[in-house]
Image (cartoon, rainbow, N blue to C red; front, top):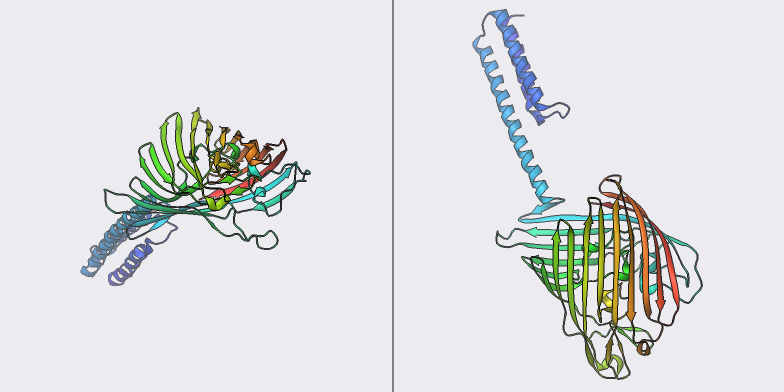
Length: 462
């Protein structure tokens, strides 16, 4: 092969090789740096072979080699810039979490998909096939005074949840964000025959600006962080403060102060629940949170103005003071265990406790309100058997001091429950568990009923 022909061969081969490397830095089957190193060695070898054949490079061949070396240098520079860009994108994704940016607003999402398979029986009455008592424990709705039911089984995915959050950059001196949260619990129009379609419902929707919160969120009187690790929607429902509602809240460090939606629930003389809708003064909640390596502790107090007017019962208008105190927390017991608890007592707290087991007050023949005193609490112990396996055992109790002459004997006097579960997480986002629960309710006239439930759940959090 002559020097000119050989030079053309070199020129074509080297330029083709350079293009191959410079293309989508490109083949994913090999490391880019290794390809560049190998091509540089090939150039060196070809130059040595050319020197050995012709003794020296002609001008055109020398130009080809120089162009090839320049192309290699540019390719390396391109690769370095691509790596830097990839690092920037990766860092941006880490900062944004699961979401995306629109201008100076970061939009993120979270939630979970959950399937519940529940079989339960009641000792003193049948729960209807469309009742929400078949989805999760509602202590005040446990049947009493009837015949025992058989075991009833239902599957549902209604607890599946979507959470959308925003955070907008408004300058270093302020923070602005929002959150909207949806699920499909306690909504109408679903069926178990054909489609199992259920409407979404609003759980939370609020705006945060610096230390302020405006919108619907967990009541400041409730400590969500103390709730047990259960498969049931709440778990220790009889002893739990559980309310979401609109509010305005201010937070400074561990201190929180809120004005929240007022709503008086009243028991009429026949035991029926009446919602007067005559409230004028918001419920006022003050709370302080303590935390450390040992865990967390929360103390919260509430003041309420309970109110009815003449158009509700036709016997005049009246208002009464409601108040309460709740102490709750989560204490670490070594590296693998924790204990969670809550204790609450007060007058006129009815709708805040156990999904409104009893009402806030009863009304007498003159239209005067008599607030109902209640006390309640729960304890839950969680043990981590391994990185993938954990269990919780928990129990709760509720007691009401009903003015029986005003409420009749049909209202709930006390309720309690216990549960135990085993939850397996084969990988971090997935929980597969089984739980047994026993719950009981007793009315003021001595009737009682219990509910037994076995629940198997699979949950994928994202």
